[in-house]
Image (cartoon, rainbow, N blue to C red; front, side, top):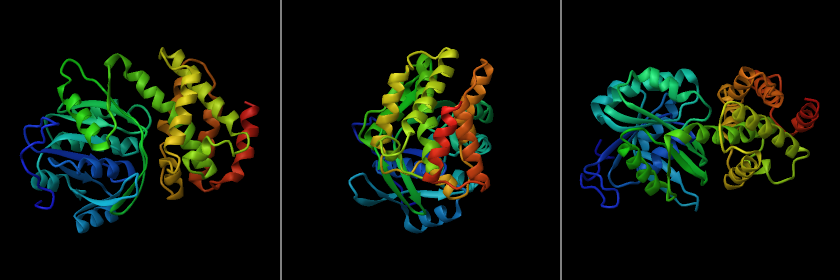
Length: 354
């Protein structure tokens, strides 16, 4: 533990009374990006809970994670990693905050069960996962032992054991919790200091809008990059034949479904601009879904486009293009289709007949 122990005196700009502890659930790209950024703070101890053996071994051998920043500079962020909740509790201690980045619904529930033993009573657990329904799963799993909220981000990263590359800067939003919001405000300030970009606190009444806005972005960028085998920037640079038609169809379906479910301030034009912005700002990044299909891992398609399809069915609307990209991703996952540019004509021709 000496490798990550910090001074107990807090930096004045954070106003922290003592060193803080954070546990990150998930040792993939975003979990390691978050862990490496937070570990740069002089009064933050970070532990990553991950089942990825190679990741754990590299982090422990190196004494942390090597972070390559946007400017290309590489530095070591001191932290530890483990797959043992008991070891973390005994050696690292109870955490003040937890961040969830695991992908599957099953792993989300497991993270919640473990979080209630690794966070101090009343500690704050924040899901920054893609897709919908995560807050409900974590709430059930934690039995009200900790406080739960959700956040959204458009930061992008890629990872390999012991190393993470920050591929694209973006926004961070966290939903407020009533009536006491002091811990959310504290985390927002910590993330602002860590990333150098203001983290916004979203009012409780706007939480669903926040989640849907990120969902629409994910519904476009994630499956299209995975189906076509391209980085985020190629989704918006105009070089891919007919892709604009497919993007517009996906956005239209998502906005229609959101509106039918009472979500306000989610107009097509705004969402189109947001998709373009995120695609450009994370241009060199390989989306999480493309990383998954390349590594033959299950993707988050059910929690992203699958959620839109399910919500569309509830209101009698046919989200046909979302169904199409779901089918193509599943074919890639099953090995009956290969990710790549050869899929673009099929994608366009089927979109125009829906």
